[in-house]
Image (cartoon, rainbow, N blue to C red; front, side, top):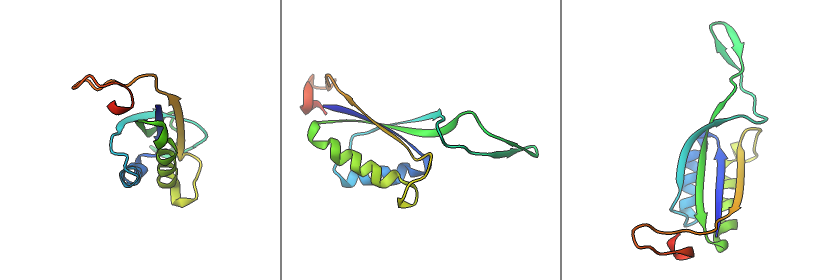
Length: 114
């Protein structure tokens, strides 16, 4: 089992969610987060150009069985790229081992709980 965490642009959320549903990935967790990397956005505030320290992003977390890792990652990659080609600031995907998953309602453990 793996935990896939993707940090994407806010405007790409609907496209990514639809791509995941098409790939038969229907259980996701979405959070609003802020951060910065290589992306640089300049904004005009009271006549001055400022560069915000933190840029709003979306974090998607998905627990998947090993067979769905590539399917999930490919769906996110395809949908999260700006204009289909990609730009600085499109985000990142992290894949971590998932030690255990337990469904609270039934007590099921492991891959069947996902």
